[in-house]
Structures are given as C-alpha cells and as structure tokens.
Length: 118
Ligand code: DGP
Image 1 (cartoon, rainbow, N blue to C red):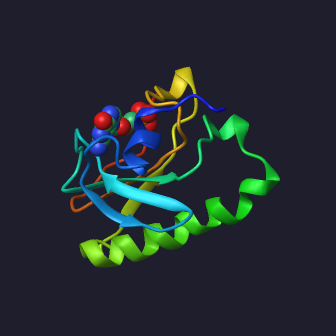
Image 2: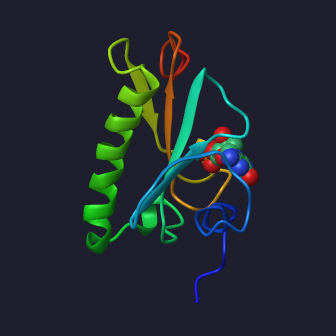
C-alpha cells in the first residue's frame, strides 16, 4: 500500500485543514503558510508523489484539477484580476510534500514568475 502523506491524511479527514472543496477525485484546502490573500492547494485524493509519477490513468483527475481551480478562482473572486496555478516537482523546485498539488494563488499582483536571472 502507498505510504500516507500529510495531504492524504487531510483528504481522509485524519488531519485538520480548511477544506474549501472535496469530491471523489480531488480535495482543495487553504495553504497553512499563505503567500497571497488566496492560497489554496488542490490535490488528487489518491497519492501521486510528483509530476514524474503521473500516468495516463491520472489524466481525468489532473484535468479535473483545472476545472476545480477555475471554479475556486471564481468563488474566491480572483478570476477577473488573474491568478497563478503552480505545481512544483522535485528538489530544484523545492517540492516539500511528496503528494502532487496545484497551488492556486491570487488576490494581489504576483509579479514575475521567477527572478530575471537564468
Ligand atoms: P510545495 O513546496 O509545492 O511542496 O508546497 C507545499 C505547501 O504545503 C506549502 O506552501 C505549505 C503547505 N503545507 C505544508 N504542510 C501543510 C499542512 O499540514 N497543512 C496545510 N494546509 N498546508 C501545508
């Protein structure tokens, strides 16, 4: 059996979180260290460690994450001004939690995606 993650425990209700959406495929909850007025994490309910571990069987769930992100952006009132969807993968991206997650960030100008230096 797949090893539990912080986020799989949140999905199952075994750890507390401010859950803003949940269905049979994905769960969305507020980031514990928000970096913007809206900072929500959208995770697949089943554990996919990183983008490197995605399979074709995950396609529908990953697509669904974008639908949920769109709806949450609207619900949060950030859809018109714009927002950022971000997925970190691995060490160089500072992925902290090995359970694939999409960050939804908005509510203020977010600046450039990365500093200008390559
Ligand atoms: P990343 O660097 O992409 O792996 O981002 C992990 C995010 O997860 C980070 O912004 C902080 C957030 N986070 C870590 N632990 C918890 C937790 O227990 N609860 C919640 N709500 N967020 C967490």
